[in-house]
Length: 483
Image 1 (spheres, rainbow, N blue to C red):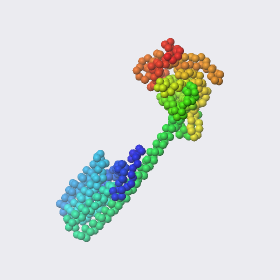
Image 2: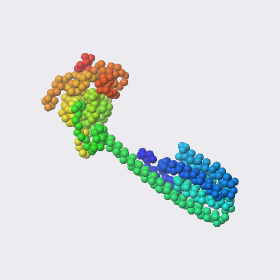
Image 3: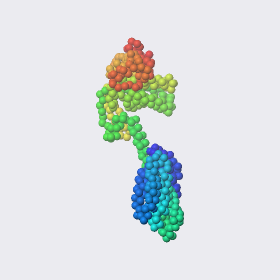
Image 4: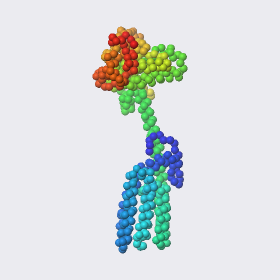
């Protein structure tokens, strides 16, 4: 049975034919029934073949007075009936057997029963009345061992009983013997049909129960996947795995990560006249785009605080390229903002600040888990953003030391923060000119070569604005601003 969500079907069982009223579920049941009964059918056919071979001794014992009759009986038994059963067994391995399994097994049972009646007709008059027991065995064998469905079992039982009546009349069977045999045959008909009826009702109910359990299991897996997705949207994969396995997350110290902050300039002033739904829609549009950017560069989003977006590179899995990756992501974020300005979706402008340093990470909360980082590096990254300029990437000296071989940076001097502390700061003006040379792919060949040499890993993404030199500094290599 398929584990996918199924459409609602009529699961009512028709009392006479024992089939579901819904066609789709009936086909589903037949496929399931084939899968669970095919091996029983093959074993049943092999068993029937063995019985027919074994009862050849009965031909000899009951007809030993006439060797010619024995030979005729064996010709029918071993020359017709046994090959027929063998051919039917071989057909069970055909791809067409699934469609015709019930008809084939029923026909095989019917021909076997007719074959027994033929043996009875060829046997000595004193022996032929013993063969009817084989017809009785065939009737029960069909419904129990071969697991033929009730409607087909009923057809086989009625046809064989009628065939025996015709055979008895043609052979002139004495009435007392005919009456005895007919009563036993009808009894076996009732037993075989009743057992087949009850067994199929039982199987169909089991099928419905299994189907319901499977649907519930599918829904449970869907809910688990949804919960897993929500957890992974909240926590990094490594942290989420630890939380699921241990029920808690141990705080971790990282001595070298890069924290990135963004903030929309004059956000409160620019949004005073916006309806609430439009404000939320715009923020969602921007932050969703930022999510895609950070995911491309392997950067972990931490949270949004109002109109501020915070992410970190270099944790939980350490990466030597975290500072360069953060700068590339920053320029791609600028690209996303510029695209929306050009499309006149928004006139918002953005500041971006980065700082590299040590942090402590952990998970806080019990009802709503939150993965966060703490330390002076977080505050400094925030100050890099707040002391920056719109449309620029402002970095600290620690970031500069890590990215100076890749980007042209403009030294701003010592800039005072709101705590009245001064820090060396730099604007990143773009990629060094010589690293933009070569390559027609996503990443300039010279930049990719240096990146691979430094960090021993490939780089698959590169901001459009940097690739075409739209933000590159002047040719002196030091840079005075955005061109």
